[in-house]
Image (cartoon, rainbow, N blue to C red; front, top):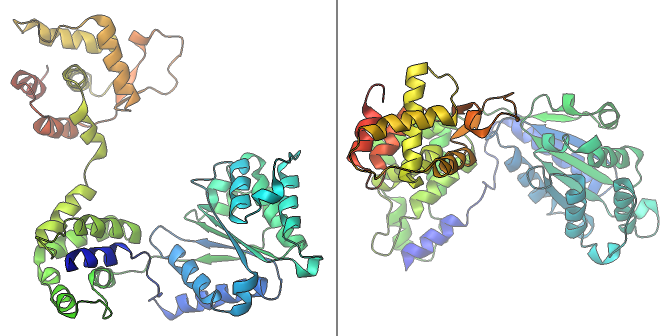
Length: 417
């Protein structure tokens, strides 16, 4: 029972609630907090970009600032927040619907139809007003993956948000979060001219010692945990003393310092906790690491039919013979026929349409792809393709393929098919 309590406590954790970095980061926090306070309390419009690589702490910084901002009573009553993501809101219409939903204005808009996106946005902002411009509700727009909004048609959303911000039609703050250092180069001239050009740059200065501290902090149970004895035993675990654990974490640190990837590793590790095994062992972390670094593309090979697997092997042999030159279905089929000639039984004999269907399925899985610039008028049998797998992925998949025929394995390992 306590093991499950522990698991629920840990899986409930998200980003750290405290920014534990240098004085410069705390200075940035204070600057951003003051910027948003001026919008929330004094009605001053602002715009700012938070720029930095993944794992640098951009989202954590913003969440910490918003948490501190919400402690002020005036802010709690007045400030409205809209959170958009460039990964989800892929066009302006979708973004407008999400803005409407988050501001609870569905009943205000109803079934009304507007001529342009600008009119939609203007209507929504107008709906927030309490009587005159000086008493409008302040609105904070947070645009995650900000660079993706620059790919929207005419950048209409960005233009209107920055235009409202600059012209003080209503008190709004626009905060963009992005990994692109050259994000300003993506903006149209009219959008760029309305942006305040405030930028906060964060660099990932996390070292391995700090990374380990994050791990142990995330895995530790708080003092408020109901079962004190269990919490003490859990926190006193020898996981951090194991050399293999440190090597695994070093590998993940070298691969990515992103907190989300670390969180995924720990979640996979914690999923192995049960009533029968209420503690984490080094083997659990090793297995979780193996799952994190698993080759998703190569894993798809395990689900292929024998015919599709044979076609992949035929392509491998063509790559060996022609040193990576493009191939087509006819070449692959001929190579497959060479293998069939060695067989006395007809187990692998397939009609041409069946082979073509299997070949097309490999393309749908993106295990093969058309050569750039290849003519669409060319018959499917002769359209040039390239393999997206390397030989080590194919051979590794063959070893793990369930009940793979011995002769197919031998064919794959032979020098030239």
